Image 1 (cartoon, rainbow, N blue to C red):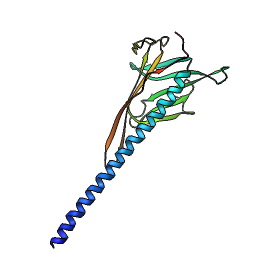
Image 2: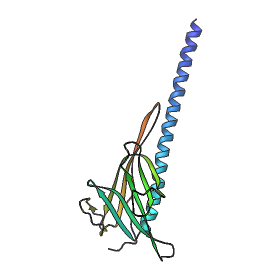
Image 3: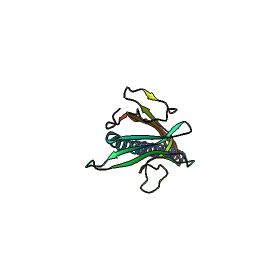
Image 4: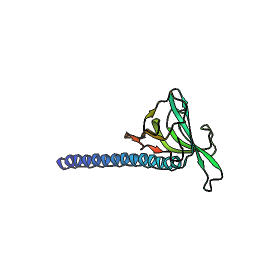
Length: 177
């Protein structure tokens, strides 16, 4: 009887330790996915912004919800536009996305870069690194952009993992001011 009781206590301890390790592994995996998604998104946005010859932002409700970059082709004979934005139309699992063209509502070619976005902000700076307020609708002085994103991932039985990631300021090199 005593051996059975001790065996049950030891088994409960082993099971509790195992469950703690599993939860820790799932949380680490959630952080890894969030970090990977944002790193790839910022990398692509950095490449596009360094090549951009034009910038225009879409401001809604006092916040920038998307911006469009004008990028020359490889042979410089034509340009294309790409839009980066924050999908605020869904109540859960909001997304930071990329879409070819200047229409942030387009679905053709849309690529969700980061999922589980809780908050996202785009900041615009001029050549002297002065923040340009969203009350200024003109994008003529934009030389740098910065993105700050708050991402979370939840898994059943595991505490929600939340992370705030801020990009470096991306310099739009081909815009002359």
